[in-house]
Length: 306
Image (cartoon, rainbow, N blue to C red):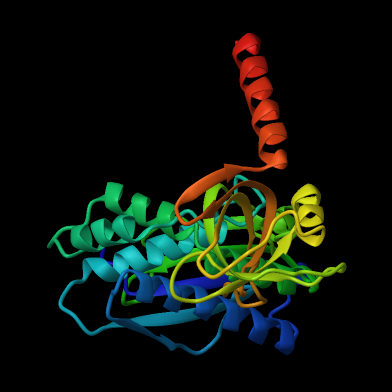
């Protein structure tokens, strides 16, 4: 197979048209380039893209790759991953954030080899599709595209230096566009069953004011206290706080992304206070006893179901 040198987006248009709404096309290009450069950045590929003149046949946008390294295989990696990301229908709608530093470092080490295997390319495509930024930008791309009725299909191709296809065009039909569009910008809620929070500022009056504490050094967090029994005990002065006091709790962390896929400031909520820790001594709360009974009941029910 020839080495890849270019990437093409092919807008298949109704009635053999060769024009498309300029605003839609420019918005789609912006989202595509954001995806491409996120892939380049994540895998440290040392590549930039140059736009070529439009060509017809529907309407085709082409980008020529310029590599700053001698690794030709990195260009093939980029265009292959791009084609996969842009054309593979997501298996689920919710945004995922399951990437980790060890995974990306392992992939970067494999990409430093002289030859990049198809297995590694597939792993890179699988990894990058977990990115909230990639999924959000791709969602934006298809959201813009859906508004133009002339586009009945979109295609993605890898080309050689002479603009000849080196792979079959990967296409997405218009009825499948909504499958790429996110229905929510929220990430799955993360639940920490045994979070320790050093209380900086408890709320000592009625209302919805947020408590302040230190969950992970050094930045304090604001959080909702949703444990009613514990709140009432604090308001009734049955529980008091002094410097250094800690609560062990069930903590929910709510995250969402903005319109360009960047993580917004997380929101925290304590659902159940399990223990109050004072001078290293743990004291179980009334809420804790109820919570742990329910947890044991669920475990017993699950074992019976099997």
